[in-house]
Length: 318
Image (cartoon, rainbow, N blue to C red; front, side, top):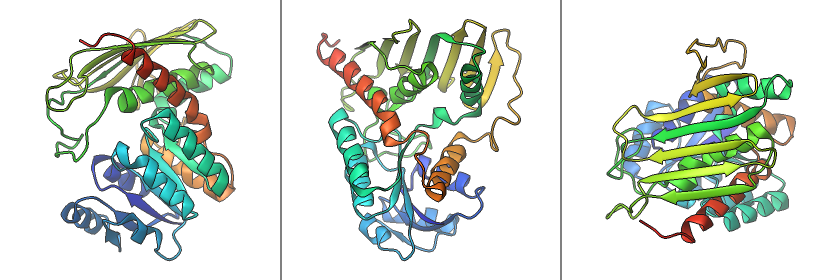
């Protein structure tokens, strides 16, 4: 299968690392932002064609699918461009930064008939898959998820420490992971969703701290704390409080409430969540089926993010 990648930044290279371990996939083009870094990444990964024009990538012979790991603000227009060109698309989380645009993308997906998927990595991390499998088997139910998403980003830098050409967002990007995962694990959409935020950064014009509280109709709740002011450790830390055990997840690691590590061998073919989501994308294309975290499946998360956004706009800002 001939595929292309949009975005040469930190997450773009994570996808390229994962794709190297997936048989039968050939990356034939890289569409990036800055010419110098795009060329450097293409040469490092042996990608035969690179460009800063997505249309040029879409014109490459034999191209079937595109993964977009580009700035969030570009997701809507680029996803539409890819789908209108008749190519399957996987868009890194979030698929866009508004509910209206998410609904439009789903409509375009229906019109074009291509496979379209959001990069909701937490659905694919073996740690969260382990919990999901137990829920599906009827072995436990989530009573509460307590989640902390913490980074130290007081300047506009990406995960690789490089200057960003766009501004990140705690709600529409980082909270999206947990909002979707909470609803995915409970099988319900939040009926209560409130958010508060701290002061705006004077230059980035975004909130650097945020708190979110959600509840689904069955009664399960989720508390989420997010910060760009946390000076380590970094990442997202999940605590599942269930009716039959407590679990702590950190990316691809999982332990019980007593701190005993759980062996995740056999949960999936890899411990790399990004590789696993890409495998799902390619498999769905080959099997002509809806993928896990399709545009339709992630739309409830976008609706909840919209509700959270409206709760912020309706409350006094610090």
